[in-house]
Length: 348
Image 1 (cartoon, rainbow, N blue to C red):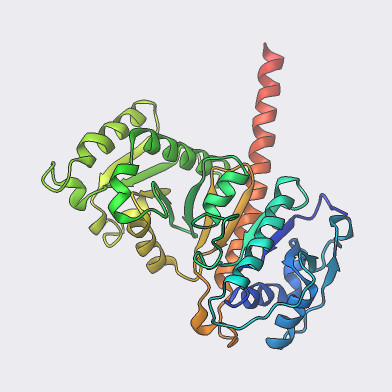
Image 2 (cartoon, one colour):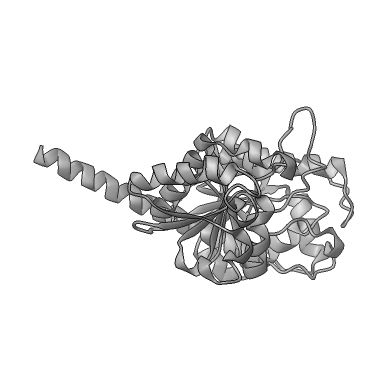
């Protein structure tokens, strides 16, 4: 039975041949974690028992087949499948990829209907999940379709937040994807998220240039002058504190990023290389712009260490607590907004 006082955190198990099972169970091994939330892992009792034994953990869990069987303050495992999976750590396997998708689909359905409050996803392999039924580059695109929103990959840590104009797009196609509408839409999502999800009033956002040296006045590409600068000018005229475009090569090394509440990068590696260099292991991938909350660790399946007991669960733990904090911040924001609206209506 859902307990209103206890946030229910749904966890999709990810690629079973990767480090997902290990980091999930290591995170939940500390019994104090269950004082903050109630976890529901989407997998099967057989699969979680295998991980528990393999990594010599002593976890107790409650197997469930429906959400009215959830026990608050206990580790719950929702049976998405009943068959025994052939887990071979470190191997890319399309069959195992399908279990990752089953877990994600079941967890997303539970998120949509309110059976869980937030979703934390363990890493998947973007190649072995592909099929005729599932044709998405990753979690972000799938969740955007299911939750009917405009998603934005927002990498966050304590003092650094990096959003992307384009995410899983080949480098050769980046410039044609970046339009005035895209820039306005993504910056709107970031602004709303900073205010609502991170409780930042009047956020300051820096935008990195598309080309080296932001185009050098058209010498190294015209996109910055013809698309990015005029769009940022329009946004600034509406009162938003948006700065740039800044040359990306020196922006992080000069520590200029510390002057802003968020940084917007033009494409995946422009933003994620510095983010992961500065925050790896404690960074979180948050999907902003959706009606529901989803986070994940800032790393992949790590096949090379899978099954060896060497995986560090720090980023997954951060992902759990970030999801919980954002959930609380949103609730508080909604209550404040509702109270302000009621006050205005009384005055009228």
